[in-house]
Amino acid sequence: MSEGHRITIEPTDQHVVVHIDGETVAESDRATVLNETGLPPRYYLPRDDIRVELLQPTDKATSCPFKGQASYWSVVIGDTVHDNVAWTYEDPIPRSEAIRGLVAFYNERVELTVGDTVPLV
Image 1 (cartoon, rainbow, N blue to C red):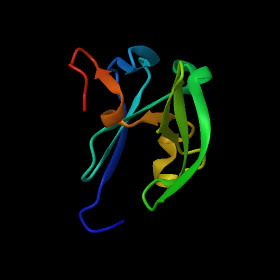
Image 2: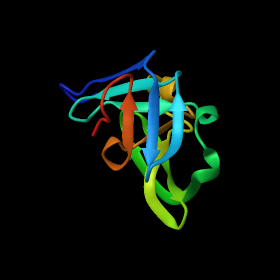
Image 3: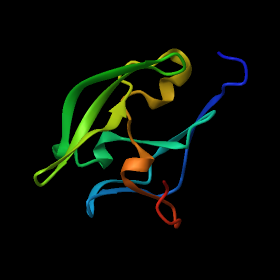
Image 4: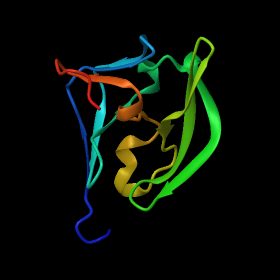
């Protein structure tokens, strides 16, 4: 791992809600929060807590030396496609096993509410 770069992955008991265009896309009491140096906290949610019918797989893939290979989804609300707004690690590296198969959304591209807080950006 790079000097000074750190990742922590922990379950949270906070209620997490994801809205896009006023539509509830996900709601969970079983989220996992990933904190990574230089990035905002990312909340990973079980697929059972996501309206998967709104997800559309894309060809985008990225590789992270700290988490592994990510695949992406767009979210379709009505006629609007929100490209590559969600991602998952289907086969993460061993140290990031806790996020396997969970789905995260870009905080800055959705309305993300955690607990009783105002939406996070």
